[in-house]
Amino acid sequence: METLSNETNELRSEFLHILPCQRLSNVLVKNCLLSLLVSNLLITGAMETHEAVDFRSEFLRVLLSRRLGQVPLVAECSKPVANPIFQSAIPSTAALESCPKEHIDNFKEMLKEENIHLHTEAGEQGRLPLLILSLKKKSEERRPAVVFMHGTSANKEWLRPWLEAYASRGYVAIGLDSRYHGERADSKTAYQDALVSSWKNGNTMPFIFDTVWDLIKLAEYLTQREDIDPKRIGITGISLGGMHAWFAAAVDTRYSVAAPLIGVQGFRWAIDNDAWQARVNSLKPVFEEARIDMGKSEIDKEVVKKVGKKNDSDYNYGLRLNDLFVMKQVWDRIAPGIASQFDAPYSVPVTAPRPLYILNGAEDPRCPLGGLVVPLERAKKAYNKTASPGNFKFVAEDGVGHTVTSFMIKESSDWFDKFLKQGIMTSH
Image 1: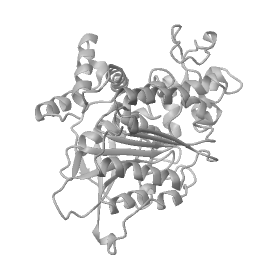
Image 2: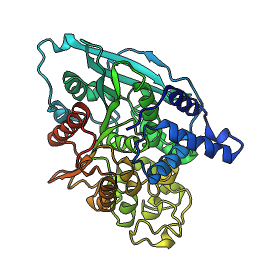
Image 3: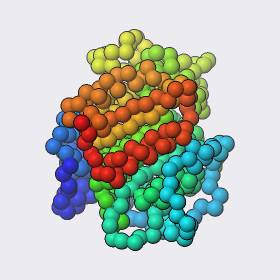
Image 4: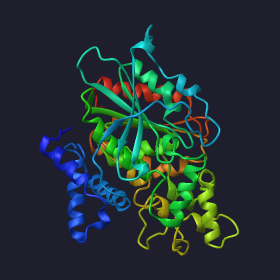
């Protein structure tokens, strides 16, 4: 993997701050800036594919289209959160507590805790709350780091057992509140309210994409820290957090290792195979609002389906073209392209050759296995093409639905140890 020079880092930061993209009067200039953004944003290797660069360029264009304004990348100290907001029942932490950890007699005294607000863009949601745990330094050696993403309705404080386990093993462990969660939520309906607002107004992308922007800016911050090895930064997450990890790794190569848990799925496949109900039910308020606006008596495929293209045969999912032309579809409104050019068949393979371990439940109705057939086939080809077949792994745990398990926590932990501690970036 190539490292970026100081000059390139400065150029990358300069283009990251040219926001919002829609204010540029000349489309050609905008496209050139985005091309430079991609080439200087990412730490790419010689085996990086044109498909991967094109994917990132287009994804970044979408992200930039709804940014509020540029701000300096500033990290400010904040205070611990005493009573974090949960927007539904508090999830069990049993699986997180099973994570392998080193026994340290005086662990609490050795633990360093940082509470930080990182400014990623203008506005209240542009303030990214971080909880960073690590062992107090005994040397100046840079350490591996892992970013942890919570699921829907939870927060970074819920992640603490997971963060502590990794910190005990020498990692810098970073938890954060995704958009409209934790410190970024002003009520117990903040996330669902934001989804409805996005459907109504089309000016934000609270489902996955806005948080991915935060993760791009977070990667920029982490690579500047003196205690973190910029070549050894991993990312993982659960459910919604698994989706964040999946897309962040796809768009930003500074996340050198990824292990999304119960998050990777085929959005388009689910629509075309009538397997969309469980995912839609997890976001029901916004789909109910769309149903009302579209004059429907119930949520059906027409409410859910993304606007298609007449020549879109790449999915080979048996499309019925007459169903594809519906205005103001939910997915394209709240996460443009998630059921087309950014869906799993395209976003999973572009992570190659960086290590990627996808862990799902075999009986998960929100991430049905049928929707991963094409993405997995393409990913395997991409990893073979980049001479790194051992860097890709997929496991669907038998008898498990949409829940994270101790097996997944242990498997992902071993994955990070293998590639971030041992430094094995290519396995044949």
